Image (cartoon, rainbow, N blue to C red; front, side, top):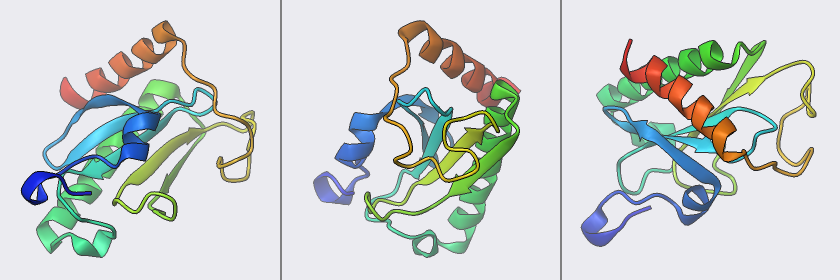
Length: 141
């Protein structure tokens, strides 16, 4: 997405479905509002990106490092059994990567999470605990 003069702007669907976690050097980190699965998104703060190949070599490398850091933070925060990491962009064209904490007991296991059960919004205190845990792991380590 682009805003004024090609500035970075978050796609409206991502804006509607997420809570901000914070910004890394390149990426905005967001929490999907679905408590069925702890689920983060990374969105490079660059205008008009749709594919990983749209990033230059240095930024693509930086993005992969940030994906790794976010995945580690989510795994540590949730003690999940498996991480799903994907860049699909079929419904939302803006480049974004999903990092989803999975358990064998979740509603979708072992299938992908999309469309299996309706999203369940986080209770405020549940969301804040998870956000704080992830922020602590990303920005104070």
